[in-house]
Structure formats: C-alpha cells, structure tokens
Length: 190
Image (cartoon, rainbow, N blue to C red; front, side, top):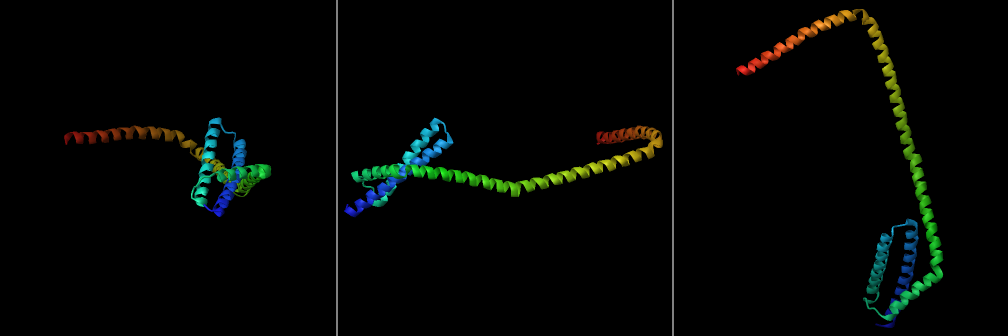
C-alpha cells in the first residue's frame, strides 16, 4: 500500500469519525426529544453503532479494499475528537434550529390547509345542511297545513268513512280467506 492510499484512507476515516460524531449528536438530540422507553433506546443504540460500523467498513472497502491498520483507527478517533472539539455545540444548536423550523413549517402548512381547504369545505357542508334542514321544515309545515285542511274538509265524512271501511274490511277479509282456501284445495287435488 503506497503513501497516497494511506493518506486517502486516513482522510476518509477522519471524515467517517466526524460523521459518526455528527450522527451520534443527531441521534441523541432526537432521542431526547422522543422520550422513548429504555428497551427501545437500547435497541436503537445497538442499531446506530452497527450501522455506523457498516458504513465505515463500506467506505474502507471503497478506499483501500478493506485493509484494516492502525492509521484507520487513528483517523477515526482524530476525526471524532476534532468534531467534538470544534463543531459539536454549533451542530447541536443548528440541529435544534432546524427542528424548530421544521415544526414551524409543519404547523404553517397545516394551518394553510385548514384555512384554504378544510374550513371552506366544512362551511359549504354546514350551509348545505342548513338549507336542507330549512327546506325540510318548510315541507313539513306545508304538508302539515295540507293535512289539517284535508282533515277539516273530510271531517263530516269521517263517520261514514269509518263505517264504510269496517264494512269493506269485513268483506275483503272473507274474500281473501275464500281465495286462499280455493287455492289450497286446488293444490291438495293435484
């Protein structure tokens, strides 16, 4: 392995160390905001470190065919140390600002959707319901008035109609009974 490949490897591993530090800070900021149960935190911790090791190994394979030597560990430790020394606090502050901006943006988009889409649709729905309720109450009032007029006009004939209805009911009852018996007797003959 020549010196150029070794320098590329150390530089790549220093970058990996700094990126792992950034990932670690990002993970801890989100973990603090989420307030997850301890067993889930343990699972995500293992997942983070296994993912970080896998990413470092993939980069190592791309840079120097996966050959592991002391300068690799030195580069990773140097990159992580440099990140935590210089950029960790600034990155965490930047990350908090990005999270606040994303939350503000989400709330703004939800408000815009609520104001421009949801509220007009709800308003139209309420107007339609009010109009239908009004028309229904007007229809009921008209039908009630017509019913009262019809009842008033037909009230002199009410007794005669009741008497006629009883007579017709009695006759039709016998008619339907006779009709039913006639069909049943036909079936028995067949």
